[in-house]
Amino acid sequence: MATKERKILVAVDEGEESTYALSWCLKNVVTENSKDTLVLLYVKPPQVVYTALDGTGYLFSPDIIATMDNYRNKVAESVIENAKKLCKDLQDVKVETRVEQGDPRDVICDAAEKMGVDMVVLGSHGYGLIKRAFLGSVSNHCAQNIKRPVLIVKKPKTSPATSTS
Amino acid sequence: MATKERKILVAVDEGEESTYALSWCLKNVVTENSKDTLVLLYVKPPQVVYTALDGTGYLFSPDIIATMDNYRNKVAESVIENAKKLCKDLQDVKVETRVEQGDPRDVICDAAEKMGVDMVVLGSHGYGLIKRAFLGSVSNHCAQNIKRPVLIVKKPKTSPATSTS
Image (cartoon, rainbow over all chains, first blue to last red):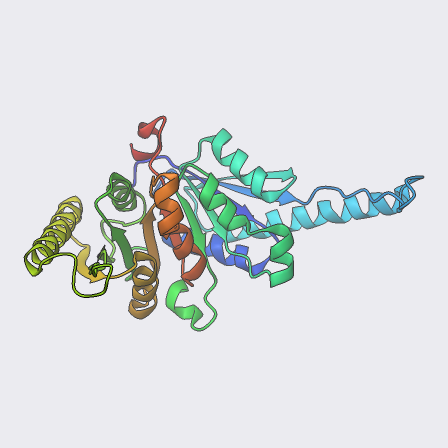
């Protein structure tokens, strides 16, 4: 096991579920002496351009759109920075980062295939019922569609110590 | 990582998907020097007792039912034996085996909770459409319902060498 070079894709986002999944992966899957490459992927939500109801123009001014875009980039940077910090103790592990844009379900599936990764690690979102109805479950979709091992890490609610320590 | 004691539940069955999942887990998740405990769980299908259409008796004689039961036990033994063989190279890893009976979806979820395992490893069945419609997907159900990390290992169809070597 120690000599293998594996490429592990970890999808990261703003949620604590995702931070937990990455930490769990670092503790339980990635070995210190391995030559694993960890690819941290953050998927930016697509830019939503609202048009006015009568179709005559955009609901938001270019200024506001630029501000929103700026905000999304800041979030992306901060998520990636936090994820990299979590990885910094693993000296032999290469860490790559990627920021892409789109529906996370499609982007993660595509990335896993294109990069030919050995494993995909995902947190399981604690979305409420309504958000889940719109978004669908990213982890379910990926588990069903990615033709590679998929690890879905759930943040325990009752006794966090059981799985993390 | 080396000093942790983890309990990893691996669901095994007759399919090659399950054998692949166990092998992948042994190569990629279980470390040789760890004190991991691997629990191999085989779920026997429940005994189906067909009654005659008019409700007057059973469709099968006790002899035939005994023969079918005997067969199911033989299958269980053979699956567990094969799984244990795969694990024999890992000297420091404790291997426990369990055979239970019922709907694999419920049995695996219950076992994961009751044993308080750190991770559940499942193969992803290549059931055809019809069988899947009746059975549902064991891996989907478990990924959604088990409140612990679930690793779904898919047997690659195109280039097996990529993930196994």
